[in-house]
Image (cartoon, rainbow, N blue to C red):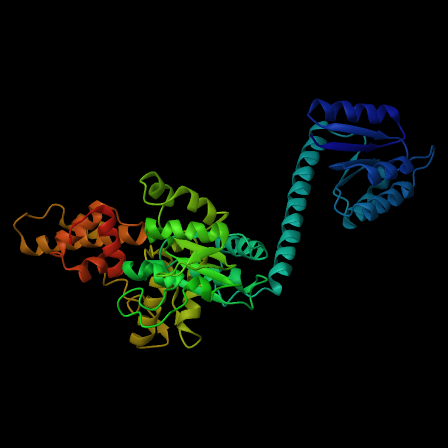
Length: 473
């Protein structure tokens, strides 16, 4: 509840004001002299001051009120002050309003007008304080990232700013971080920022795309292998953990790690110990692990595909990166970066880029910009240059073919296109489930390369999912 300070040498005036304000939900504090008022303002927080202009009997100059006003201003420059004045001090009151007084009222005052002024001024004062706090926080935040290495990241949205702020904050520690978000959103860039601003920034930084590693070589890639451990292993080789010893290891697509690899990874995270493939010698490393996934690991845990104890080891802190369509303010800055200073965008093109869903996120945007620069016929790029008009949306195409005859060959082909686009869009947003993979296999006659492309996966990643779901090749 807001507290209002009433300053007047007339006790009856103070009591009347206090009663009226308290009936309307305010707390009040009364001071009968300027010295008492200054002491109170120095010790307590007030939302507003109502002050008289004269405090000595038979004095009408208003100089006492003027002096009190400037002394209050010196103590709290933003504190709203309403002057209560007789008509003889009207010119002085106008002068003080120009100097920053919030309002003035004549005696006797109108209760409704005074209450209206009090409510408005307190609301404005509260808003001003909030803006000041936000400005201070922004200044502190900018000072914090002024000397940070942002690894060339381009952004303009508050959502991305919050991710970067959190990345910089946790970079100073050595805890494991799980970066979540859809494919192509920039999870690896956040990992770069964490390492570049950590105490380990001068140590090794090794990146591993777990989803791209062949199943039979995954263990050797992560933990190393002795000569003769498998066909073609002519000499001993170190794994990624040994290569990252003393530094940072980034495991991308961690959700694709098979259960056998999860057990060994859990051991390394707990003890720092592991054995190379084909060896019984225990080795020890000290590695900070960052990981990333586009999968819902909670669902994988429930289905028995991901170990819960490993999840909690990886997910000491989660850094959730939203998809590009949820951070629209990033789109145009990214486009400007990708197309370079030699090209510009019309207003209609800018709006079309903002309206596009970007299911492939930043990766799709970058590819569209490369296309636009190559195909541009003038320095001002059009939406056609980006190739977005030539690809109908699934919703638009579906509505066009919904009522078409079933025996129309063109419409049959269009329906197949709708289905394929739907699966591609679903795959870009979430990890494909068993049904999505089986449908894609049927649509592409079992051609693995085409199925993988339609689902937004590598062939190795598709094979792993087929094995996980028990789908015959």
